[in-house]
Length: 369
Ligand code: SF4
Ligand code: SF4
Image 1 (cartoon, protein in one colour):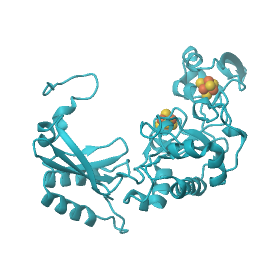
Image 2 (cartoon, rainbow, N blue to C red; image 1 turned 180 degrees about the vertical axis):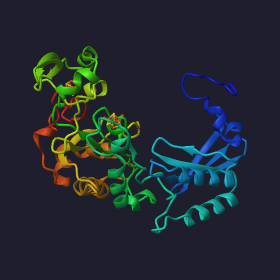
Image 3 (cartoon, rainbow, N blue to C red; image 1 turned 90 degrees about the horizontal axis):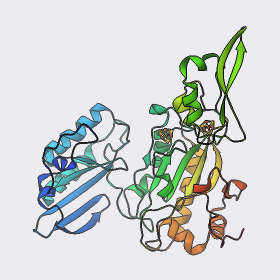
Image 4 (cartoon, protein in one colour; image 1 turned 135 degrees about the horizontal axis):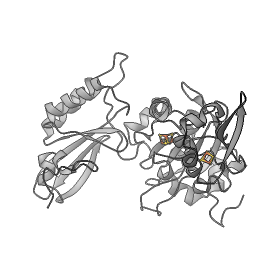
């Protein structure tokens, strides 16, 4: 039986208290769910209770005013309960058709001054999900690329697929701004990864003052860092040197030592990976594989990345069978055909190597290029 009001100082509070009473009452008793229109899911319980879940995309980086507005909607229609999904959607749960109609009408009328929806409804079924993504330039210290800026640029182009069911199957998009990969890029249908391509700079002058050198050396998973001493203005200073041949540009050392920054306007680039999924339907779960790399970081609208992701999505939409996820489709037609249909140039970046072994696709002896 769920514990009530559990208070701990390790980890999050117990989830039970955050569930609407009707969901608590029917816990383990739901017998069906049906997407009755894009963004609206009807769940029916064996007790006869019915709920409607309305899913809306959010920008992920949210102002307090925006969160207050979400809470106001939840107070008005949902007894004060609201839920965020891992893909940055917000979900409102109502318990009658009348409330559903009023909620949908209300959400549709909430707009930004430029006329765009504040709470676009969608993200269910055979469409694109809101894009799960990472911290980017706003919060993290190791990004090779931004996160929310690229996502915004991309979703502006793919918006029609968010609020509709035009695609063969659900299509999950993801973005991680470095290979440490806080986003779900390894298991999403189409994903964007930021890649560093140069080793860290070593700021000899300040390294000794701001870094624990043994910790910095220990932080490198490849043993590429060794201690060194340099002379600056006649004074000896302790510092480190990086074995560039060994470095895989992961940024772990920068996490430990701020005098080893990695971000670089020319070196940092974007890689697109495709075909990952968690689902077991049609074919087993798969890791995403690299199909395009070296795309330049192009703020503020990242046109090359947006163009390629949209193109891959549209080729998939045209050629896949109903219910086939991107990975299922590629498995049926073969990777060679995927490159042919998408006109993506096949490069050496797509071949397995040590640095990107977990995201390349040539892990099968059936591969014929
Ligand atoms: Fe930071 Fe990398 Fe995570 Fe982006 S993916 S938030 S850069 S650790
Ligand atoms: Fe080692 Fe990664 Fe730093 Fe390179 S970037 S030196 S591999 S910790």
